[in-house]
Length: 459
Ligand code: PFF
Image 1 (cartoon, protein in one colour):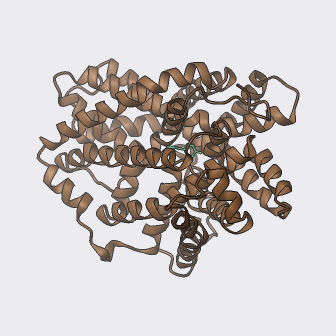
Image 2 (cartoon, rainbow, N blue to C red; image 1 turned 180 degrees about the horizontal axis):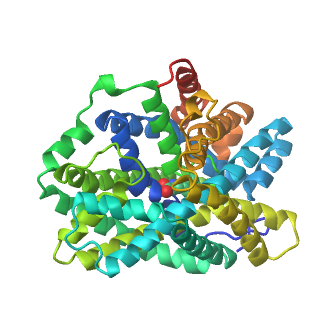
């Protein structure tokens, strides 16, 4: 079945859920969440993270899917349609543009990190992890990131797979794959979390993750938590809006969004439970940054009797989780280009993927040749950041919260209550006024106050 704009419609609600959970669950849960929690005080970060998911990211996720379904097109075109249908100012088109351009930037670095995951499959398969200690695992990761040629090779493979899937259309291949692979990833992670409970550092890890020391909560912790919530739920980059455009009118958006948020948060917490006990058992530094997952888990795989198999399985599934997210980062731009140009979907996917691939070189070099180069050294918050750090920080902590803020204000203040309730199929729902309160007041004010606090009280 085709939507009004010529785009496809998901074959079932389950397919949409798997694709959306596939988008949400990715490197953000298993790679980014643990290292951010590690660098931002552990329990304090996790508590704030969960609260901001409930109060801000989830209500905006509902909004984003809804705006997509109302517009039934790429984010840029959907916003244009909504603006003309409801007589809103043309300035609101920034929601579509900001998200789409942001997704393109995230794709550029996401593909480099996804490449690490694929490369680690080959390490696991060739027994590289056997008997490795913390220092050796750290050195293995440092050697990889110091080597631009290898990084580029895996970045190329990751981007090629992403382009291949998007070029072929999301339905047949991806819908079928995610249905099997996402539950498998969850089970494996559960197994690893159970293994982690048997290690010496388990108690310390639990204290680190669940002891809430309020003095650890700074404005920057809250900004990082909000940014991570957006990143992890794939909110505000147009990915969910594009997927929302392919959702059938009869389906309940709110319950789907709640399922997506619960699945996504459980995977992140489970990843923390799998990783932190090893961090403490092997005397590693929880705040060590982007290498955390790639340094800790190989140690466990190297110790386990069946480590080779589990290692291969884990990094394969991490790669798959990353791919099911990266396709949702490429899709918004491709959907827009399809509406705009007469070139085929295949050509457009290749062209746009090529652009993001090239941009990815700046991330590759951020870990080696340009590791000491801080392009925005004169700018307070950005002063000691590499290109990768700037892309990562700017998209998650500035672009996503700003676009999310605008989505909330647009749906909360520009569209009337009646229009939104009808589009959500929630005219009589008891939760509707509560959701509307969250997107009219809580989410926008929460985002603004945390921005202001970060500018006034940096660090
Ligand atoms: N949610 C993905 C993750 O956690 O890895 C990353 C992501 C995908 C962010 C799609 C944004 C997006 F639009």
